[in-house]
Length: 327
Image (cartoon, rainbow, N blue to C red):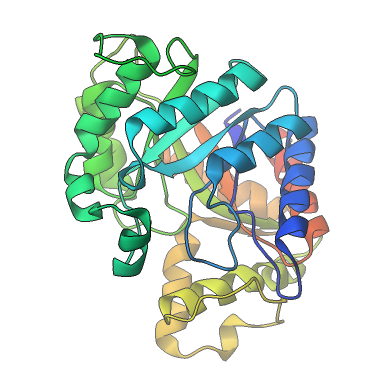
């Protein structure tokens, strides 16, 4: 059976608060742990009022306190926004608090405009160019190999599982070269999925951490008793996608029945394109869609993404999806 994990953007609902978003994330993580999901990842986003995961390591500490066995981590930390040393300290602290169940997924794209660059006091274009070197430095800060002039405390010796994230060939190439597990963000950028996985597996070089290629692929999953109900639940995230692509991001809106049918053709085409990495429907529909996606990608793991306006519907999705792949 392909293992399942959870990617949570810690959505803030219209009419909701940050405190509610963090409470919902903790409840989602506890449910994922109870149902047997392998990992619970939080993604770093900035200046987005509908996503509450900006201080990713702090949110992970909150999740860690709510759970005991599920792996927790970043999906991911956008390393150009930070220095490797600070990230080593943060995730070394998480490992000291919660033991060897910490994942550190690393991404290259800062997703930041000029205002955020100024606020971060970073030249993010330049930092992105240094990404491979920063990844290797971060790994050395944890392992002590090669020895660096300075030690991260906490950090040095921490048992962190490092992942490379990506939605292009660059991340696949770097993951292969460094012998890292690779997670592909097909849930919002499926264009290069097949080529990236082929490149990663073909060029993979074993490392001390990983002897053979290991792939996780993200897909959007919304499950309910009927296909129609699941499509309605998914419409909240669809609205968010459309608003984001239109330059008008905001908090997660309530669902709308038959939402996609109300859209102009370009927006429908965008949602249809994202739908190639999605499972939306009843247990039977979700089972078939996940099975087809696993057959396409030969993924070792699937990480399920998706935000619902009603937190209970997200809990239901996790339960239905897990039952579907086990049947």
